[in-house]
Image (cartoon, rainbow, N blue to C red; front, side):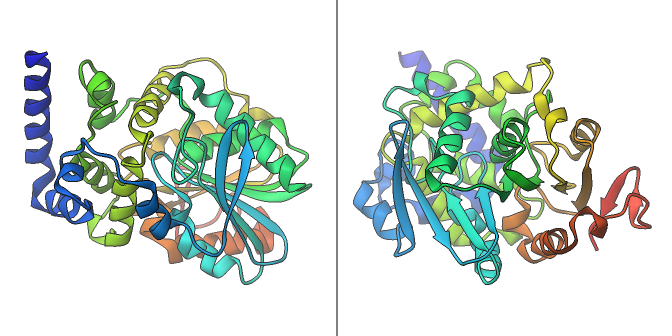
Length: 345
């Protein structure tokens, strides 16, 4: 046991050295107590509820999950699925604009945010996430809608669109995860023993802030409110083991060579991708374009893994073009294309 904690201490020092003063300072500011700053303590639910539940918040019980979601605006429906370790607030900039002309539904995905995960992390896997989302849609009694997803949420959105193609009118995927790839070193660290064991009990927020900085193409675009949110959600009671199980799910999927069902997607699909994504490299976009017959790709120079947070105005502009004109707004042979990749204006 002593050697295990010695390893944790060394790993923590290594991560701290790599993260720099900025990540350390952000982690400390986001932590409501010293115990939280070390990553050992949970943040009480009343503290989180006060900050992340508002008048638009609604809850629905599906498959044992108490799903936190918001349903705002009127018009054609758009559902937005956030990515790994995030929450519905990642879409706030999009929601503020899109809800003026559309009905916009955002949710804390199973396992994350104020929805949280099952008591037994072994009950948490790819299929349970997709199945729970599918039942969530059924409960909302939606027939047709636009579906958007980022990162792991993009994978869930793509799986849903492949299985329920008659319901998805349009599909928007932002830096979606899913195909085999080399995994980033932070994920490799989290899935290696003994970190994969210790992470069930302690997750220093400096690692969370470092991961977020690494996910951005330009960390100067990070806002304190988003940094705090990622740290707070990582210390929701019960989050630590679910986060570690998520790393296992992602690692297993990244090594899985089995064919994916995305060739069944019929919905017009817009791929939005940050060119400086160190988590899911933009080169993987070719796999998506090859499998989805009716798709276009727009990339953003200097942007990382979370375009709707990092460049909300630019990404939203392309989404509005897609909603108004479909893929006709992104012709195959547009002058801006380079090596099969259309560059954002």
